[in-house]
Length: 199
Image (cartoon, rainbow, N blue to C red; front, side, top):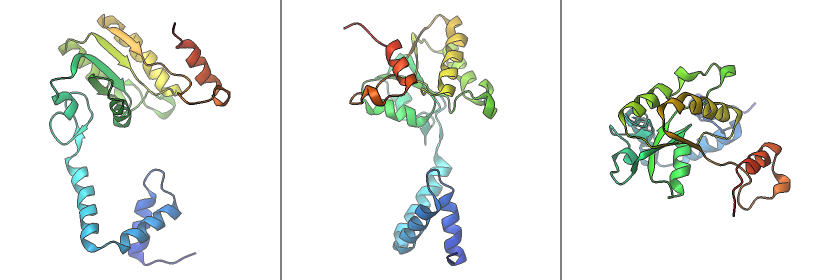
């Protein structure tokens, strides 16, 4: 076993706790950090502390922000009659990158997963219902991930929210543009067939 100074081992251990970072990658990152100049290391450390201390959920949609409301909820040009429901801030950002959607969002921060002990009270469903009671919403777009948990969450929400008399739609899933059908799995092909439309 390779022996590093205790301070280096501690840094490697902390880096290895990050998702997608294995022990070897953590070692490479640790060596990189050790070779950075002191000012850059301090800036990096301060950025981590600052992000942790000042980033919280938007009071309205639960996206990440360092203010009371996120930049989307503050934008008066957004279509306030439409809410796109997503599982995570990463999903929100993926939709925003398209520059096509102009409505608002609601971030659930998870999906229903009874096997993992995640029920309706563990994600931001109550907060969504509160919004529907106070805002003039015409359409809800369910943009949950196309996983078993995401599908279960979308079905649960569609049934739960149907009593509000609001149009509820689900984003289409299927074969990606530029992808070959022969390499698609069965569920992807089934979803593509279900989401077909007339030309």
